[in-house]
Structures are given as C-alpha cells and as structure tokens.
Length: 243
Image (cartoon, rainbow, N blue to C red; front, side, top):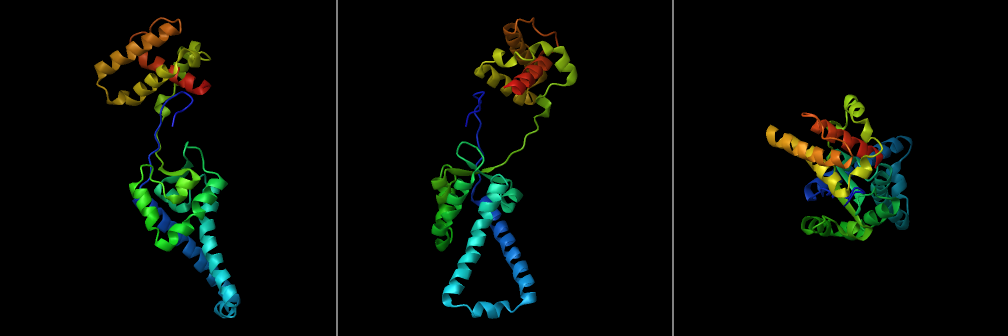
C-alpha cells in the first residue's frame, strides 16, 4: 500500500501457526463462556431434562444456535475491536481490508459466514489456502477482500522535533510540505529510520548533503556544523504534522 506521501508500506501477513493458535484461544474462550452460562442456568432448572424434552427440530435449532453463537463471537469482536478477537489480540493479529483500512461489518460477516464451507472439512481448505497462498488468505478472506496481518509497533518519538529544535527552525513551519516532493519525503524518512545503523562519519556526510539540498530549496543557508540532523528532524516533524 502507498501513503498520501507516496511512501510504500508493506503489511506483514500472518501465517498458519499464529492464526491457528488465535483460533484455538477464541474457541477456548467461547467454550468457557458456554460452560459458565450452562452452569449458572442449571442452578435454577433441569437443563438436561428440558433439552431432552425438545422435539428433534427443537434440538436441531438449539445446536444451530450454539454454532451461530460461536460464529457471532468472531463477527462481534472484529467489528467492536477494529479487526481483533481476544485470541487475535493475544497473538498480535488483526483483520484488515486489502488496502489496510479497518474491517467493517460487511466484510466480517462474509469472511466468517464462509466458515460453513471449511468447518465440515476440518478447516483443511483454510489451512492449505493460508499456507500456500501468496496473501495468506483463506476462502472467507478471498471473498470478503480481507487480510490477517501481524501488528508491529514502532517507536517514532525519536523522529519528532524537540522544543529547542522547533524554535530554531520555526521558519520551516507551514512550508515543509511544499518544500518536500514525494521522493524527497521518502529519502528523508529513509535516512531518519536507518541512520542509527550508519557509522558516524558517513552518517554526518549524508545528513549534511541532504540538509544542504533541502535548506537551499527553502531559501536558507546550509545548517551550521552539527546541526544537519536537527534540521532534518524539524523538517520531517513539520511535514508530518501539516500533511
């Protein structure tokens, strides 16, 4: 996917192992909920006798209601928790649309409704589709246009401009987005992300060269020695704030 700044981002897809374990955790949670509900209900009445007293149609409907409750578990949580069930949250997984946007009620209903095709076969089609597919999609994901991704959290605080830096380069405020073409923004962001892995001398040279180019475009002189990176940090912070 590509952001409005034309920076390409990739979605780390979840594999069979993590998705299978998340499903087992959700099934365990549903089972525990049912056991607690049945235990509480049985205190006030003869539950087994009432079930046995139902006609075969009633018993069939009761089984269907139990299965529907398990199916509704995923739908309810995915819609309420932005694509996560308790099992998925425990494993750091999330259901999203193909463009990375949050999953909606329609997509969640479709992707979970198609479990009726996979369940009778022991989820074998789902396992094979996730294991062999390039996008790790089971049948429900293919039809609904969804993905299950592995969440990754990044600390971006080091890219923000400190108060002293903001005051020093306040002249950039309000102008940063106009000074940065999409390719420039990508180069700047790439440098800020990767600079920790550079040796000191090459890092300083790259920062000074990039800062000189961008400061000239802003109509400013090149930053003083040692101020190239604070200039780039401020430029990035203002551009991200005003984009």
